[in-house]
Amino acid sequence: MIKFDDAAIAQMPEQRLRAMARAGETITETQRLLAKTNANVVGQCLANQGTFYEYDHYPSGDVYDDEYHAQYYYHSHRPEGGEHGHFHTFLRAAGMPPGIEPVPYTGKAERPEGDEALTHFVAISMDKPGQPMAMFTTNRWVTDETFYKADDVEKMLDCFVIDHTWPCLATNQWITAMMVLFRPQIIALLKARDKAMKNWAALHPGVDIYEDRDLEITSFLAINVDKQIALVNEALAGLRKTA
Image 1 (cartoon, rainbow, N blue to C red):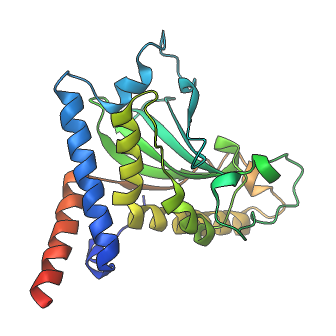
Image 2 (tube, one colour; image 1 turned 135 degrees about the vertical axis):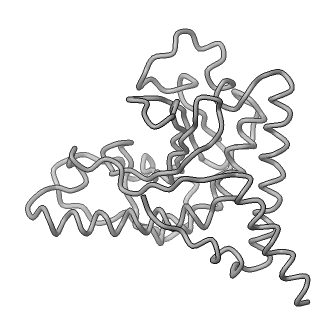
């Protein structure tokens, strides 16, 4: 688990803080609306999907926005620590800013390239009641991504938008907003991922670290939506006092 300094939020630009505040409002509102019918964002992905099997992607075929080229799916495996499952979040090549190249790779494994290239941002871990409890990053082989350095993935974060109604408008708005509200934590997780990969390579010379099954989760951080919203609002209030 990595450490995140909450004080860093107060140092963020006002424009970014306001975007995070709006995202927090979206998350709160979508969860409120779903709760009125005893639903949640996870359940909306599992609805009408038949028997729930570990490792399968939900909803079937993943959720993809062909305008923004963002993608996500939900699945579960080896539930532990109160986790029910997690969302994996991606951006495909067509949605990436120009000039970004994958991390150089000389290994033997095949990875998506060209128009098929994609980056994995983070997984959003969900508890059994359907609430977010953590975020984590993974090694390349876990999601079969292409793999880009953290600084380049940071440039892609604002490109993650799911702007349609399938399988559920509220869930799509929620996950889009989660990537905005927790942007600073996601960046910290990605940087920690790269550091973990570098350290692993130093300890395992001659090993293709991107394909090493002994390295799966590369960084992990517990999250709390209400706490994050409070930190953002506190930072904005501080800006108003100094204006």
